[in-house]
Image (cartoon, rainbow, N blue to C red; front, side, top):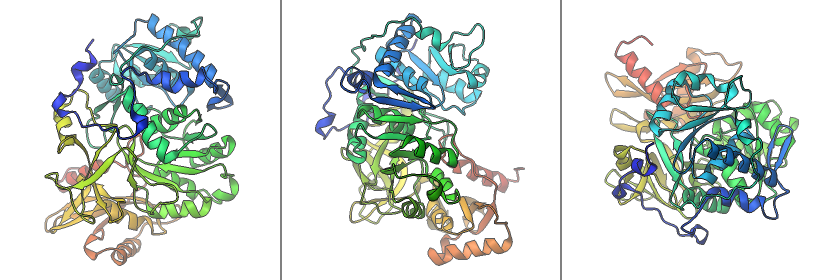
Length: 541
């Protein structure tokens, strides 16, 4: 079995991680499971709810007992320090129990999205060199097709002859002292969604995970043990890992896990479980706003605020949600590489359309391709330093590309910082459309199109053009009841011309039934750009 340290990037390519807050001064020996679970389960919070799922409420004490029994079971399988264990589970208590049991043992978790297929699972399992996998019975087929050769532990519905998750737990002792892992030992490998190419494994240590909670969650969310976190992001995605597991457990609050997302299911879950902090993607907020009489049909008064990430939150969505629910959505930018959000809006100081300001503990600036800091108002690459930083698994070339300019993490996002220190998203560096010498941020055009009453959602990309090199093209999903027509195309083009410089308007518009997405909800613009390149080359689409 390959040792984790052999997959770490060279020391000279490590980002500079800074710990400017007193809460970030951790001891050399640190175990994230002890901090998130044992301090609650064995303290005054033992009787408080930790997880709500379906009709079950799991207290911290009971969660602790289940985690400890599973830790004994995993050790009996021969798993221990630096082994990698793949998780393929929906949002359910078994996911959290397994993740925490692994951390107690020093096992490195490799979480995978439930919608991944055999090819993708085979790549991740092989790249991470996993020893075993815990798989939900209802989604086992793709893992079996992947033929990884690793031992499968089946949770949920099982078949005769399976090694079951339950069998690892039954009869095991209810106490298990956490391993004395180091603060900088790797706790998890999080794979990117692949929206910009092949998924990449991002290493996060026990210190990284707690530092995200003690910077972003502590200072931006400011949760109490009375809060109930909820939302639909998969726990396998770092947005969900943080928002639905790490942050509630760090502060003795509770998390509400739900099944498959639909706008009605999300609204019903908020109402039934009295969720106070909801994590959702921008698209999800737009879908909930389309539910007829949403604010009258559902009691959303428990919400203190909501959190959005994954893609930039349009100002129009923020304003409509605030007007109809009386609560703010805090936009943020994070990345799998940085673990979670490092620039965020703050309550009471939201500027609709702006991502926000650096999270306490992080430093951010806008730089050019040479790494020189740009003046306010000038677009460039956002660069950040803080208590978390990119450490790619077995990807030294990508590591050097991401961590540049003296250890700054450069995510590839184009931003503008205004005179007041607010950061405004422009586009991904590869989403900038250069047409006849003009530089056009695709998302800027998208935001204007989103404001048109006929548009449900859209994506704007560069399409090859013999005269201009590239032109701006919009793929548009219309709202129910709106039909496509040449007249509507002209209307949408004129709408953009009225709001933006005329050279930015979409010279081509294509109406589509849906947009391609990653499992995390991000629009796969790379797929649309490739489609246009193939069309220009005469390939059938």
